[in-house]
View 1 (cartoon, rainbow, N blue to C red):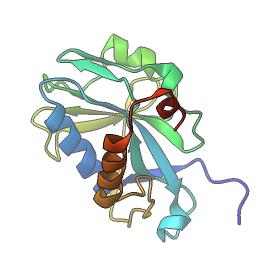
View 2: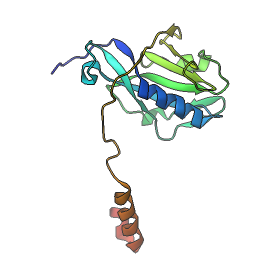
View 3: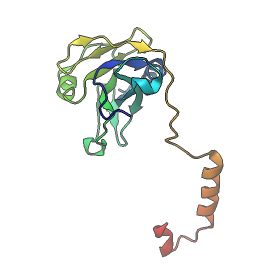
View 4: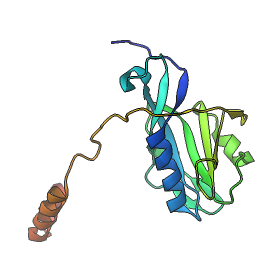
Length: 173
């Protein structure tokens, strides 16, 4: 087990980029916003030191409209896997605005996706707003069970809630 991982960013997993494109299209005509997280490349069977973007973290309470997206930064976790941000420009412009540049200070790479949200409709930028290269890699995404529950679990909880008399003790569950 290594104590320190390489800071080199090797690229983004194809499945993660597909998610970003789909989420941006689904959010249209509003902007989409998320934070990029990476895993150690060796964990993904890549025979190189470095990191691969595998995940997008969406912060609860993120608000967006056709010209901007705002995040409640106090809700953002202090995440050792964080490497940058991603957001969409529904107008299709693939360059950072002044407001974008003001948020680029955290992380190493920032992706802007533009309408119509196809494979050629995105670019990556560094903290200074300079375009950079970000390879799309065919790597397996780790199978993390963030939402480790089933529809049966949800249904049984709903049945239990219906049985609840709504009394004072129901607040202590």
